[in-house]
Length: 545
Image (tube, rainbow, N blue to C red; front, side, top):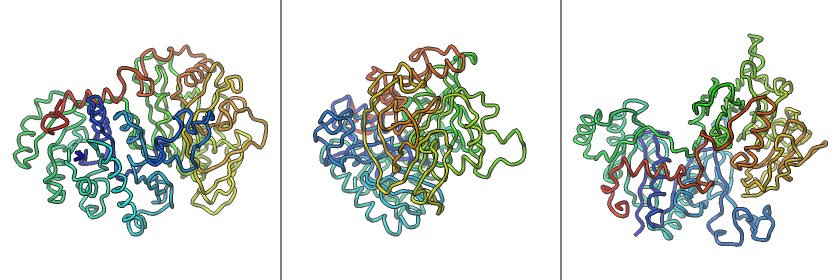
């Protein structure tokens, strides 16, 4: 019998993804066949993975077609997309991530709509009401089917819930929590974040509000993100255990193992300036400041994490005021006062509407006047072009053609079918001053609906998935800066342009990632965080070492 543990929460952002990844790594290192699962996720941070029926076909991540061509698909339907947390958890479990790990993914695009992705395949853009009325039964069937496949091949499933398991308005249609616990016959580990305050009240209220059959499944609770002396919590723990009968199995200290963020909740707010990566002790005169417009519909913001983790690099998220910046003349330039050494335009779930928002906020003129390095990633690449055609397919308006920022002589046409692919692209450092000295290939993934072609002279420093001219570079390759050679070359060029003597990459700052093959990775640190602070013996086999 497959054992399933559902890591649920009293709210969003309480540490579910971290605990799930830590449990996956702990069990995998003990020789247990374990896989992650999240029945329904809502996130614009996605990864490209194989479909379960394609697993085992010829090819590798770097050569998916298995025929010597790193850009060739063995099967046009080989790839699908899942949320980043389940991708990371599968890697933590030392297993191949597939679309079964996250069979239902909702990708918000604005105006109350989300794109529905079922078992890796993108479907319609649907409002929440339409999803529950027309698609929810189909989504539940997909989730149950994917769970059964995973359970057939694994001893343990670590399932991650979504949001709060105590949302009484959703208990009849809560796929990630209630339905998963039901069809997986799961035990439940309940997490509560003490940093946001009211932890004991949240825990008590959640336990009281869950359906009776789910309450009986709760095997324990864990308090997360605690700063201070855990002994101060003992009176509250004794009282909550007495009132609910649910044992508190651990108190996790506030710690960030370095796992990618699941969604934009972890980013600075969209209406104010926020800085990430400025706490590594590097003095101001040796720092680089990378400005990133905080697009209203930002996606795959994890592309920026490798930059923020590099020593001496601050990623400065800038607000994008969709209502315009009328009034104070000083506010008409959104880059004013930032002292930016470079600008990176991130991905977006809605390129057209975010392009209009950038124009309204004054970024078109500001970027045209900016003489430092500018990089556009995926949707950001599309924003940099001359125009977007067939735009009504992507945006919420009716215009067929929308003028781009005009910083690259390229044109994007939107198409109905997405391009999904893990890929490796050649790196030609001589084709762009921003990548001078870089070598390759660079690995990553593509996930986009538009097709971009040159309408003027460009170079191709990252193969056909890129275009560059002068100090501007655009590419469809997600994970670009996870490639050490590319990241180091780019930051060296930014530092050279800014006249800054930056610390060498690898000196402080960035912790190793799972992809680095280092002894201590984010998954290892998450596993240690759980092992050292949670009474796993109370969970029984196979959690007892």
